[in-house]
Length: 449
Image (cartoon, rainbow, N blue to C red; front, side, top):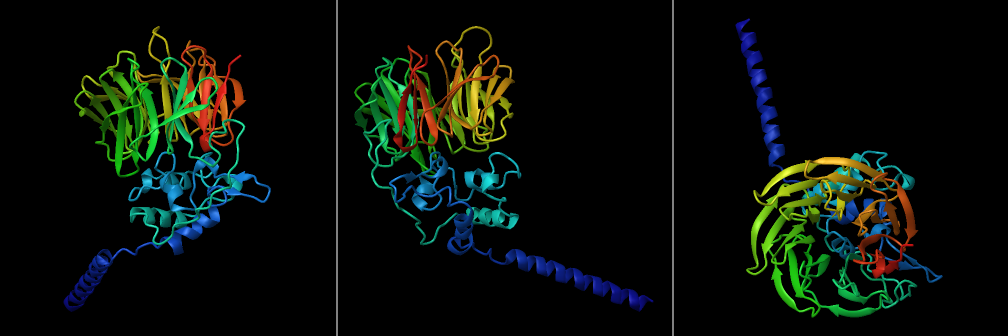
């Protein structure tokens, strides 16, 4: 009996040794590198390229554009996407591509859309995840670089070829011109004719946001190189002379907001918010808390409270005196693109946010409360208030401008403004007319009746 027990003990020990050795061997084995061209590219070709390809011209001369302005059939198109986060090397959770293909079945934001077929399999999404984790390298693949033939537009014809989308708009302080930014640079248009007046050279390869200073003599422009460096450039206005460059962000700057004439805040895809002292060009405060890129900023009237939105679906409230995060509001279910403060000194401050979940949501940030929301037919990408605070204006992925009553949260009007996505809008400081910008550098004025 004793002999049998010894044999049993030896057998158990041997079995455990084999298990441990096998586990160590597996953990020590080199990770199999995912080959983009043979493993990932076929998935994109079969499931994504039909909607997300470089613009093409058919035999009739009509231009077929990529859906949402996102190109997946060439490296350049992927790297120069509007927000720079379609694919972030090493960060699948921060990559818009991975976020969208792993949404629950039936979600309105899932890719490919329900009407285009069944979702990707877990094996396919896991493969893409591993490829991104390993650095998202493309090997020798460059992709389709074709461009459509020159064409004209009846909205603004100064650009005869397909151009990058307008990512931000702002009226000059006197309301006589509109400044627009895109990957093609900084452009100044006459208002109300929208004829191109001049182009201002900028340092960043891609620019995403711009804002005039409170004393109206400077213009801040935010952008940079995705996953490399964020840049804020300060220009004199109206001269357009570069005065200072701020570059401590480690990824593209997506938003800039002036605190006062000598300081401003910047937000970046590196998940940080930086408060800058402009006379010295130094970062005096850094706010960290967003788990993904920060997309928009808004100061409350006292300038000591800052509100931010992010790709992490949150709206966050910061106390700049203490430097602490005081509220985190998570009602949005998809990335949030923009927010704006209601122009009123009566009662608690109210802000509106616009998200990929097709909602505009109204908040009282000082008490951390979502008041109400309106669901739109398409996702809003930018939003603003009319000067009297009576309406919210939102531009959407279908090129439409929608007007929302903040009290009833009803959509009270809808105007189709552009072909393709509308990314940016600005409200005139005096007459409430709206300028909208979007794909192919389209820009249009809308007069409210």
